[in-house]
Structure formats: C-alpha cells, structure tokens
Amino acid sequence: KSKITTYAILPDTPYNRERQEKDERRTVKFSRHLKIDGEIRSYGDKVALIDLQANSPFAVIIENHNIAETIRIIWRQLWDKLGVAVE
Image (cartoon, rainbow, N blue to C red; front, side, top):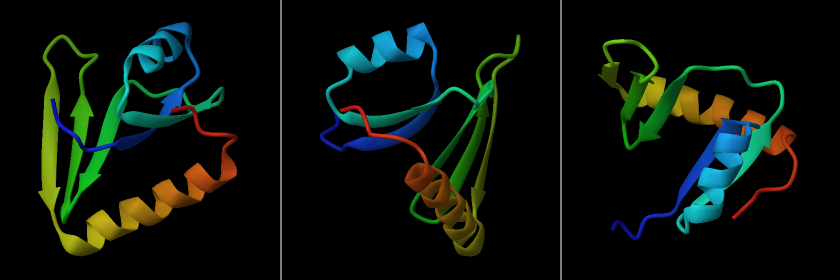
C-alpha cells in the first residue's frame, strides 16, 4: 500500500462514511450539498477527471500546470469552508 495520505471532499452518504472508517491514509471532509457522480484528482501538474458511474468508465488526464493549480485553488477554497476533517 502507498504511504501517501490523500485528502478528499466527498458527498455525505452512508457508503462514503463507512468507507472512510476503513481507510487509514485518507483525510475527508463531507458535504451534504455535494451531488457528484465523478471524481477530480489533482497531482503534480496533472488533473484527472473520472466518471466511474457510467456503464463505460471514462477518464481524461490534463497535464498543464496552470489548470492543475487552478483546480487546487478551487479545492482549497471549498475545503476551508467545510466542517471538521475526518481522519
């Protein structure tokens, strides 16, 4: 297993809360207002847009420093507005 801690903002659902209890390397904030069926992951100069809910999973990776930094800024703004993190 990876020793990298990840940070996630997830919809507040029983499934996500149960999954978080089993994940030792993830810090999460839950949102009751977040209704999404996909994921956005940012790492380095890359952003991955992922749809795992479709009949055919789909993903796009964008490698661009400015786009990755923009996504991180938006993410931090949302993270700061949400409640206490669950580790």
